[in-house]
Image 1 (tube, rainbow, N blue to C red):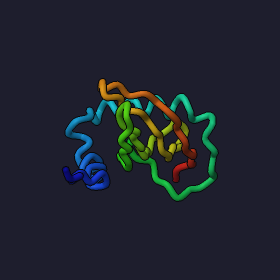
Image 2: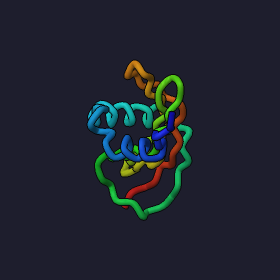
Image 3: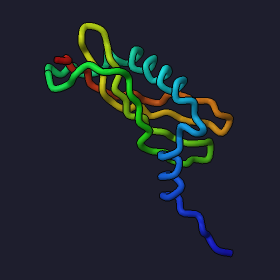
Image 4: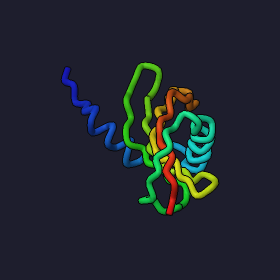
Length: 112
C-alpha cells in the first residue's frame, strides 16, 4: 500500500474551486449576517485608506477534519455611514453540507 494523497494539493484545489460546490450567493449573504451580528466586537480604526465598494469574500483555507472542513473566509462588507468591515470568519462545513459559525474577527474602517 502507498499513500498517494497530498493534503496540501487537495486544500489548494478546494480553495481554487470552492464556488463549484458551495453557493457563493448564499455564502456571501451568510457572511454579511455574521458581520452584522459581530460588528459590535470589531475595533474601529479611523483610517481613510479604503474606498466604499461592494461586498467581497475570498475562501483562504480549508482544513479537513473528521466531521467535515474548517473554512476560513476573508471578507469586505460595506456598512452604513460610509464604513466598511474587513476581517475573516472561521466556519465549519459538516459532511452533511451544513455550515456552522465558529468565530468572526474584523475591524471597521471609515471610508473616504
